Image (cartoon, helix red, strand yellow):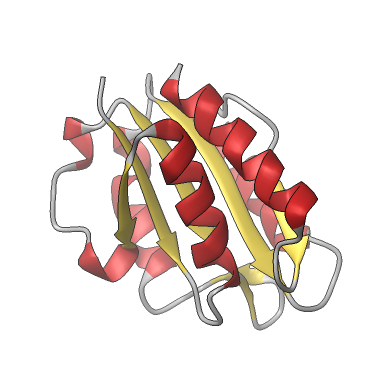
Amino acid sequence: MKAAVIYWSGTGNTEQMAQAIADAAGAELFAVSDFSGSIADYDRIAFGCSAMGDEVLEEDEFEPFFASIEGDLSGKTIALFGSYGWGDGEWMRNWEKDCDDAGINLVCDSITCQEAPDDDTLEACRAMGKQLAG
């Protein structure tokens, strides 16, 4: 089983989370702009994206990428994470609902943090990585 962590990060906060998850999972790590493989090659994937604007997924790179592969995620082990600078995490609740509506099985609670991840958040990311690894 192959695992990947695919993320978008504007400030580096979500990137720190992605690194912790990938390290714990033994997963390949990709910024979304660097992912050129096939999503079909991966059984276990953690997706990370910061909240942008009015609490939405990043709209130029990440959201179009995720929308383009959403239909290929059925039957895979999927986890979500990301950081935000304002608001209350609405973008993650919306993202989780969109996944549920699309029949995507989220294998664990999503992880969000406001601003930079603290030690507790990074530990939660490592735990997510271990779940992702199976």
